[in-house]
Length: 124
Image (cartoon, rainbow, N blue to C red):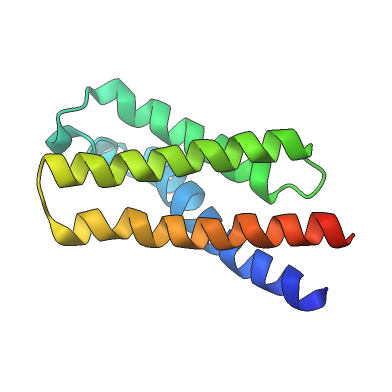
């Protein structure tokens, strides 16, 4: 049980930092770089703000222990779609292998968080 919680929190902390803290700090402290990841892919400027706010809400939902399980499921799904679409966008537009692999790596870590969240929930 303790092992499952440690694995969950390590994976979830990485997700919190990558999908929550980094975008939030960009929005607060370097707003001129808000659309640095979305503009080259052809997305409008407002999409970056929507994406960041959605990521922050998703991270809050998966990291808050008392969040309803249905809310956590939606948050995991939203973050999953975001990462899959990031991979597809990079694969179709800039074809940069580094930019294509990074969302897949984060998706793998998100999957570990999801799997161990379910193990913790079912084992008490």
